[in-house]
Figure 1 (cartoon, rainbow, N blue to C red):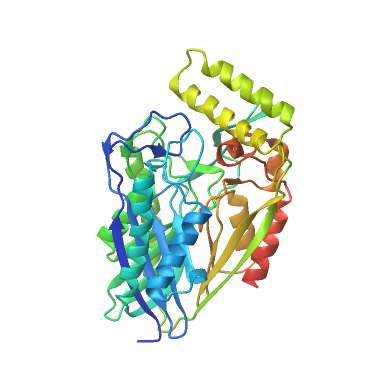
Figure 2: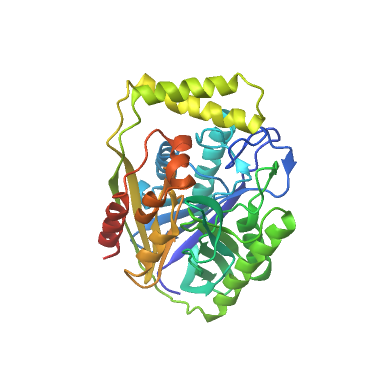
Length: 425
């Protein structure tokens, strides 16, 4: 065997009944049970010089403070440098509220604290279980995802756009132990984990959970999912757990079909780099507009309106209230960490948000064998492509009001791609 060693571990992170699910604005509070368990999984890698960890979690996302805490605690326990830990969320909309997204469920501090500790423990357990492995990478294809920015008249709505950008590549990193037995498979695909809609109140990992289960059953080892840049892509199949199985099965077929063609290497060198850039923000709305927004929301909240609309109007109230409390003063930018994780000739770029698929397509043109993971090391909200700002739509005009206070400027695309290019080169 060569120089590479790896360890794996996992933990069930399923929330108790009654905790809010996250991802859909205005959903009825509280989950009513569990359809399938959620998990946190880790693989720790060591090449004799560098030690690093990749973590995957069935979760809508984490904020940067939570990621920083996990990294520090895990580093203290394992000696892995904080900057060598990559944490990716699947963005399942049937998982628990974990970060503040207005109108999308309230996080329970006790559960979230336990969740963060479980993630640290999984990294620690994986670091105690290192063994020699071989590594290879490849890819398959799936058409399960479809662009969701549909034009209706002069508006952009959430729907289906068969002509819109998608990334059909399913990236696969595969590891075997010294006997040739499958040890771990990391796969990457860009598609919102939203087969189940806002009426679902059962905990579920959605389609990525099915794909992982099928890989582990049919191939063996530990399967781990890194969500792609799916900010503007959804699954073609929606609404039932039968469709969850169908969607997950299609991606599983692509992963399982790619594995026999992967050439395994005895030696693989780990290389990691990151850069935190400042994404520019538009100024906040005026105090006058904020006060009007708050008054309008309060008027509607005083009426007999459906629960989902109550949640939305409360979100608008809270959004405007923060702007008023800050006397209309805003931030010039927000930090955005771009991480490049390279294992021999395979490159993984992590981006912390609901990034449009256009970014991944651009990054893959910069260098061969690149996969791109969104919702990684944090979640700053939607990160639209430059063209989308002129078009508008939910991801541009509305979603930032649920995540933060100010809209991104269109220049963010240039900032992100320039930084990623430096890291890949």
